[in-house]
Amino acid sequence: MASISSTQIRGNNPVAEFARTRPPQLGLRRSSRVGFRVSASETKGPEPDLSVTVNGLHMPNPFVIGSGPPGTNYTVMKRAFDEGWGAVIAKTVSLDAAKVKNVTPRYAKLRADANGSPKGQIIGWENIELISDRPLETMLKEFKQLKEEYPDRILIASIMEEYNKAGWEELIDRVEQTGVDAFEINFSCPHGMPERRMGAAVGQDCALLEEVCGWINAKATIPVWAKMTPNVTDITQPARVALSSGCEGISAINTIMSVMGINLVTLRPEPCVEGYSTPGGYSSKAVHPIALAKVMSIAKMMKSEFGDKDLSLSGIGGVESGGDAAEFILLGANTVQVCTGVMMHGYGVVKKLCSELKDFMKQHNFSSIEDFRGVSLEYFTTHTDLVRRQQEAIQQRKAVKRGLQSDKDWTGDGFVKETESMVSN
Ligand SMILES: Cc1cc2nc3c(=O)[nH]c(=O)nc-3n(C[C@H](O)[C@H](O)[C@H](O)COP(=O)(O)O)c2cc1C
Image 1 (tube, rainbow, N blue to C red):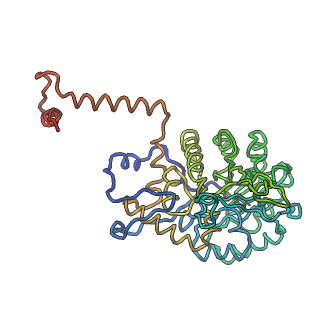
Image 2 (cartoon, helix red, strand yellow):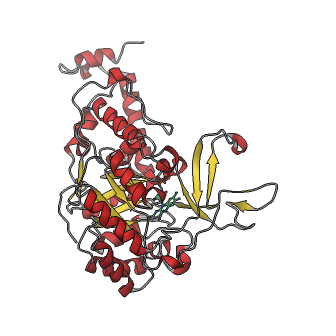
Image 3 (tube, rainbow, N blue to C red):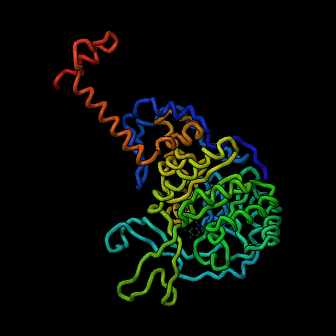
């Protein structure tokens, strides 16, 4: 596998020091779940550079189409490149698409209004969709055509196979011949595929994961990202295994195991297929805070255990605004993927994402993504440490309030502050 650029999470980040000491930016509104907005008067200054180079792959911006319906065929992937997405990850492919049988309905939405009013904002999305049900030959032809028409754009193939070394090797070989730039390995689809010992069945079993990653990394000659499932107790464990087994990057998160709801009239679960359902994968806005927590723990682990290696991290989950993306980058992500957001808002949303991310960068005088990548990571600590910090701060405030205990305590350097400490208002 190629391991080229030096875009890993840095052990010693000078920007972190800068961010710690600089005064708070007046007028900046924090990213919110409903979008990040900065007014025109707040956005003066030179244009920030959104481009990133990840594992040697150059992208015009960090926004990547996440594997799923938005990368399902030539027409939609071409559209993604034309609209300006930084990279495209195609829908997951396997050797034998004939074994992939989808059902309908396969999506269910959660709306923010009480009683699931059809007017409420969509905050959660469940799917029981499988990987691509299109013949591998067809998908390979389309990858090849896209790479011929867009040689400078990054196309990543998402792949998944059964527990079979020869199968993985054949798939890697055939997909690489199309000229794709990297692989993302789907170790994380939570429904359907685990029944065939695929997807999350591998990502949830560290011994199996290590073995399969070994096969993949011995064969692949392009960068490999391992896509992690959040449906585990500690996501850093499989992420560590994937990186130790030679993967160049981690993508997180895939969908969260969910049951969207039970119809209180029919008493049947949703999405309902011939009266029955199966737990599916949860995505969209509601998963963003969970995804941030998972990315934070992976980034901390990568920084402390793999700090000097050229590894990458791709943040995924509920991104709909530039502020949502900035949060992933502040935690150490090199790129940010969007799947459900594209299904709801279309491919053109990338323009809004780029302009909102630029506005955020202008506010802070960040000129590049590397200027702020990982800056917020150091502000996570243990609860015990929070208690210690708070007790220390209270003691300091009390000491200031009490003022000098005796006239012998007056100093020359601190004289003005010491005077202030004894003023009543
Ligand atoms: C309908 C649907 C199909 C998906 N199919 C795949 C897939 O084939 N391979 C994969 O790795 N992830 C798949 N995902 C997961 C997404 O790539 C992504 O990890 C997850 O949805 C969280 O991001 P989001 O909130 O931006 O959608 C799918 C998601 C949805 C909603």
